[in-house]
Image (cartoon, rainbow over all chains, first blue to last red; front, side):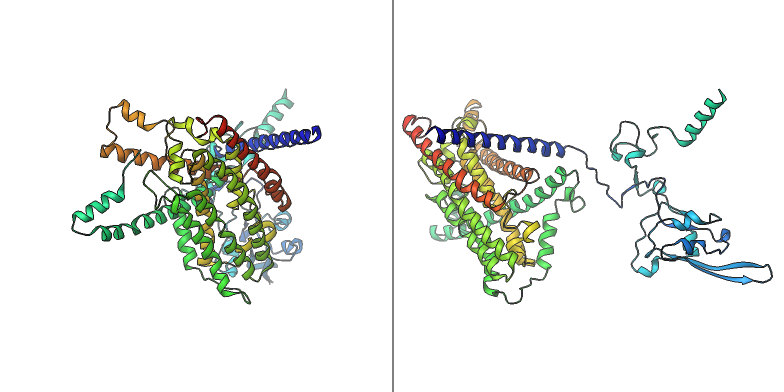
Length: 198
Length: 371
């Protein structure tokens, strides 16, 4: 009889405990409902890409010396460099240059190794097209200046966590022009120089 | 306790226009049916919208936003989409059973609304065996689920159908036992009389206070009957794709989808009727009328009272739906053995004990427990 009663007691305790834990869990779920959505409503709001963002590659035609280093460092030899040797000036003359962004993995090797810095990474990332062949950018398309999220009047720019002001945890809560937490690289250098002078 | 009687006034109006009593009644008959089907459909659609919005809020998302204000048009868009989609029937399935399955489930759920009152006279028919009828009809649904699972010619569907049948059958018993305790207290199976028996002292006279254990059992059993998380084993998407719904598309899928939300709405209304005083306000509305010296028979007062009643019952029902959705994002799915354990080894004995205690209390305190 005692054994049965103690079993019933155990069972009751388990049930109460389970109810308690479910209640705690419900409280957590309920608390989440009043929090601000963290999602970015993409076409209307966009995240500002970070400083090291590797987006569409920008190419400056006039700087290029047709050395083909970008082709050699590319994991799949993607850039197409079409040049001709001009015997009069004894130099290579660039005719066309193109990168197919449907195949590019945005590793940034070409940008890293380019001896004349004619390649650079931009913060453009929405390259979708209706036809994949349109992703094959020629030197004209590659030379277009990148559009900035902060310049688009239709878009509300939202900053990522690391670029928010001190104490703010959500990008929606701060305007993108507000000063971010910590010092800018320029300020760090200035402070170091001042310290060295003193 | 009489409220407005729409039937009487409508029939009176028609007989005044020169129709016979019989014709007037025949003209009246389809009206409440159409109205209730409409209310249920809107209720189910509202539940889908709530499910999306509350789920989104619980996950710090926004949810449907651009289809109408606050995404309110999204259920309509869903319906239109599913109507336009092709209904496919899998190869080597049983086409008759395959189509019949969702229809049976859908009809059985909508039929239960026959006895669900939204107010004193706002019910299709006040059957004297109301609660019994609901429980009886709700056990037809598993047949449809089993049909759907068996005819689909698909392992997932079959497993889901079998699970649905096992789950529905095992949770019907605690559900019936919990309802039986309420029925015993009110000496009546009619849903309207059960609500009326909870009137008088406002929130204090609701059945929750007299049947706390029964209330919890009923809520758990109802969640299992609706196949909602944590009891959504029949559709467990991680293991069974979509259970018995796997092979369904288009209109047939819509029947299942609509039936599941209509079932949730039905269960919420049942909880409100059996335990939360149905259309009664948290304070006795008759006393308010007395205080302000409004005659209870005045038309305006009756319309206001009926309106408040419908609002109250819908409020209670949607509070339960809200709780169910919140629970969905809180608890994980139970295993099939845990599910059956909970049903047979926990809810069933406790339901029986609850019934015995209710019977004893009824004999001991006939005033409080409806002797």
